Image 1 (cartoon, rainbow, N blue to C red):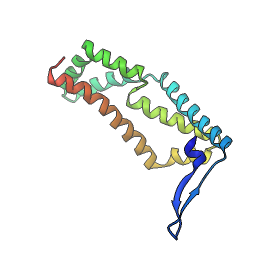
Image 2 (cartoon, one colour):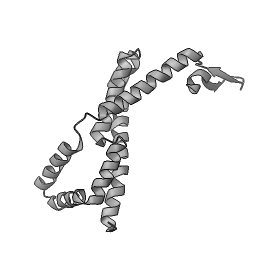
Image 3 (spheres, one colour):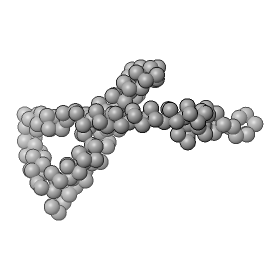
Image 4 (cartoon, rainbow, N blue to C red):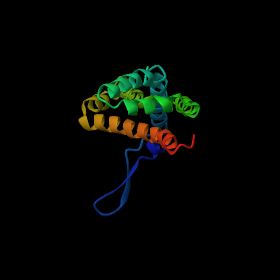
Amino acid sequence: MGQLSAGDVSMDKNGNYKMENQQDLMSAFAEAEREQVRENGSEMFGEFIPGGKVLSGAAKKALSKIGLGRISDMLTNIGNKAWYKNYTTLLEKGGYNGIPGEALEEYEGMFFDAITGHADEGLRDFTDPKQQVDIWLGCATHGCAHGSCAYGVALSGLL
């Protein structure tokens, strides 16, 4: 809300600072509340997405079919360990829903924007290829960061 009411600082041709895009206090409050409802709604939506179990089963089958059964077995063995189940539970309790689930949360947020008075932004986001790349690469990077912790522990043999 503070950012919305304070606006953006820019510099004019003469090198003077100026404030732009300021909103009055009530408009800033209403917009900040809408953004929080959007974020909370997309996170709640993520809880209903059937995620990892279906996709991980398909990934294991695909790995086996192309001759990478050992990798599939390693992933299965890691997934059966108690520490990994605890780690997965921790991620789930924190609201992490896997790469596809996180991406769908972003799409739900764009849909919310489109139906709450930001239709131009929502339509532009849905059709912008750069936005699609940002969503999927961002979710993949996020997923890899979470997964690398678990696989690093598994490969080191610590647990």
